Structures are given as C-alpha cells and as structure tokens.
Length: 131
Image (tube, rainbow, N blue to C red; front, side, top):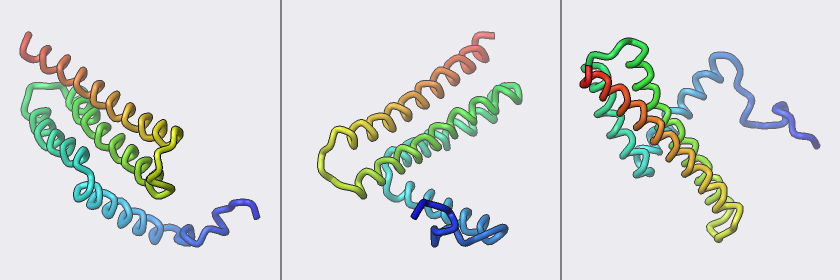
C-alpha cells in the first residue's frame, strides 16, 4: 500500500480541531524541551536576556525584529536538532555512521544559527554604542 495521509490514523483532524490539536502538540513539545533539553534551557535563558535588551536599546523597528528573530531562530533550530536526535535514538542507541552524521548535521545547524545570532547582535550593538 502506498503512503497516503488518508491511511494515517493520526491525520484525521480537520479545520479547527486540527489547529487545536497542533497547538496542544506544540505546547507539549515546548514543555518537554524545557524539561529535558539542557541546551534548549540555556538558549531560552539567552533569549530571556536578549529580547528585553533588544527592546530597551535604541534600535530601529527593523533592527529589533532582526535581533529578536535571530534569537528565536536559534530556539527553532535547537528544537529541530532535538527532534532529529530523538528520532535517531528511537531507532537505536547503537553507534552508526549515518546516525552520527544526522546528529552532527543538526548540531552544525545550531552552531550556525548561534554564530549568525552573535554576528547580528555584535554588529548592531557596536553600531549603537559607536554612534
């Protein structure tokens, strides 16, 4: 049998019921990430410090959006990385080259998001204090 969403028992919701269930699943994912993922908690702490700073310092609206967006992007990428790790661990805890590669790709994505965030913050904060 070919895969189709019609055959998936988890795809039965439509309309507002689907949106409600998606919201519950998203909330559950956030709660689980906070409880179980130390990297996510660290990045959430960074977010809690940087977003108020973005709102307090004299940035333009676009600059504020860029700064806040870069921080939120780190959280998003961390959640995707944690998803990849969970899926790999569900398959097997045995060491395998492809499993390591998948986890390393996710880790590299988080590192790049953090680097981009740092570059954006350093550039814009230096501009504010230099001029």
